[in-house]
Image 1: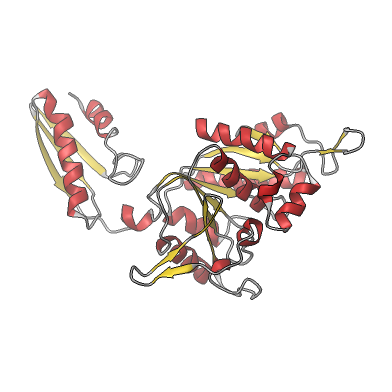
Image 2: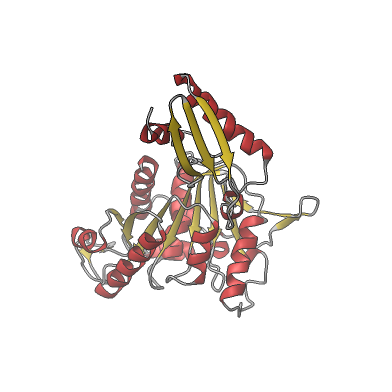
Length: 335
């Protein structure tokens, strides 16, 4: 058994409580093979002896089958531990929804995606990371403050139609402007993630504010994102900005699984003819520019805009918009 074969075996061992392996988290620092002895050096920056034992036992169980003696040692390196970095570990997949500029319907898409995934039988969490403009409460029609579990010192997420959500809008007066600098924004995001009593979830959707500022960086530093989705409109400026956002996330090591073209067309109620008031960009051309696939082209529908403003998107499920949202949710499930 050589080093590559050993690493392949180690890549099948999940870090306890996470969907990723110990090699994904770069826990394995060194592997040596000498005759019938395998020496493994791990960087386990966890305070949990139970998790250490689970990892040690599984390594020995899988590698001892070949008659090898397995010796495991650990080194404690400075830096962020897995537990410190990845607060929302009880979600099978964590997906960030972002846009490079405002006004492209990103929050409407994020909430609609949560609804579409939930309608397909998934348990969904929705986190509003837009500290300066938290729109998720209004779009869900949830204006009541979040409840606190004082015994556990945790916040209970609000729930509506099977979607669990948390937003600064549940904690502070939504009419009060939040005048915070970057450090305060980052602290608020981390504390909302850390002190929310999230249930077990299939998907956890993060609605990021426009751009690539402090909020986006804080999410990447403090959560194990499985994927990101870019929302854009079919005009050249929005697409150019979306290309920068895609490059930004690629640099951070987060996989961008695709983009959504919002307000791609408008269908006349009377004649049924399509028009393109916001531009008529070819999705294939955008795929070439962004180097990621198109997940779907969503229409501009006044009924969706009205339902979003009134906090009742659930009333618009019979629209063409939500038919396409369902196909986008299906693609995400298959990813």
